[in-house]
Length: 506
Image 1: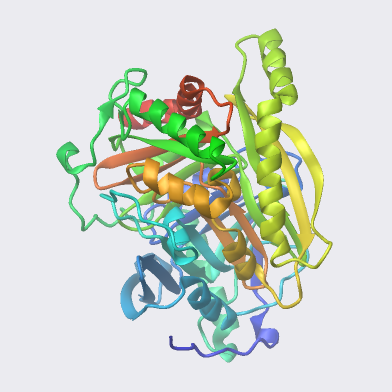
Image 2 (image 1 turned 90 degrees about the horizontal axis):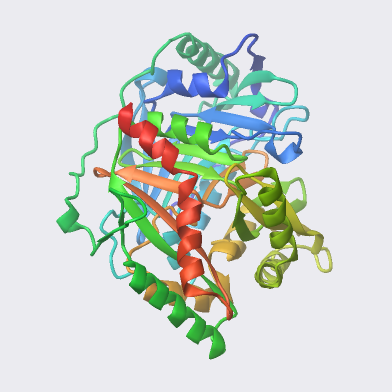
């Protein structure tokens, strides 16, 4: 693996920051910048008073990108001097650990975190797909992977639009990377001018580049079944096959292989309308604190995730797993009753505790001894269509570890694998007929200053090759009801259906 040049972190590494009076909303800016390469929208669509949910970010046109598929990572360099006209060419291929490669690229552009600004001030950001787990643990690949979505696509973003929902301000931040130190302020000023000019447009900056991979026919997919509850939707499981997979999971639990496992089915339908319009409909019908949109080129990932994976702020590490879900009621009385049932559910609390213990162990691998604790256990979070049971685990990062070490130690998240994690992932590979792709991975940013914020990619679709994929799943424990587990997966899909209907008409 070739080591990149480490660039000076002198005062010129301070970013140029400009507040934009009367800036467009994040949604409107997304519309105006749509079509830019590697467009990334980290969208607190359900922003509230929670400090973790008060910023949204838009970035595009990274000066470098990493794209990992299987054992190979391609390094893409940007060409063209203007944001609007940038394109990419492959400058190299590496076969080593993608986490280490990312560390090397990011370390060559370190810059101090600036107090008083939104936490993401530029850095590495994008997709860590579930398949990246194969580079961490020796687990079998899925039987079918028709779509072949890359396992990791990460851009190094010099400029970012950052909204603070609490103060209702928008700033554009640029370091001027990858220019040399003496030229960075000038380059940053140029980028800011270019992006502000694009924000004046009333339509997308440019059309998404066409996919080079042809659409897949239904016959080219792994075996599929119609889903009677959702006309026009296909699944990689029949109803009977899914309930049998739940039964097999319970057998593994009772045999002592695992305590629980997260089992999912992949729903799919022909891709409706434009990915951008689908996402705009999704964020309206199913707003979420860790929503996001990422244009990988061949594919788009659109997420309305309610779940934080990992965060790092200075030395503080936090994770907030979701384990336990129930649908909302149709009346205030029914809604309150269902919330109370979830609060008192022994099954859901048992699931939650198992994952809390797993994540305590994951964090302990990179945190200071005795610093890992559980400040919140069994909190109820309310969302438009469901309630979730959420806990919080925190710790202090060791001085000899960084955010990438943390991500590698805990990836993929325990809430969407099971416990013990490696054996659960082996069982997932056995029982689920198709690769998960981005689902149950993470959208994340790792800042030039060392911070991290990431989501768990649930309530997430992948659009490409003529199809929209929407996997949905749930945690299986020893007393799970196969039919109830099947119904839970459909309930989780329900919140995303209005976006499909709206997207089909746009």
